[in-house]
Length: 116
Image (cartoon, rainbow, N blue to C red; front, side, top):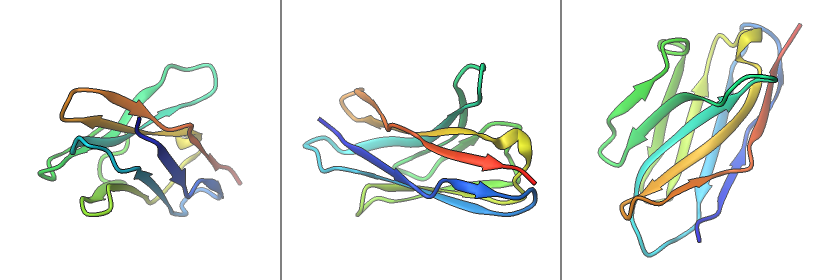
C-alpha cells in the first residue's frame, strides 16, 4: 500500500552531520506517526526518533540533543537531521510510518557510516 523512499545516507567522519529524508506515497489514510529506527551489525533494531502529525516528538536517549526529527505533512515526508555523528551511530536507518488505520510500514533502509 504505502511506499517509503529513503535518502540521505552516506559516509561521514566523526563530528560531521547528515540529513535523512523519507517520503511516503499517497494513501487514503492520513499519516499519523513517522519516524526512524536503526540497526547496527549484530544488534536489534532500535528506536531513534518518532514524530506525530501534531509534531510531538520522542527520541532515544542516545541521540537526544544531537538528532532532530521533523516532518512536512503536506508532502508526507519525515526528516532526521543528525549532528555530531559518532562511530556508534553507524547503522542502517529505517523509515517508519503508522497510518490512522494503525497499519505500520517500513522503508528498505539507508546506510549511515561514521568512520575516520
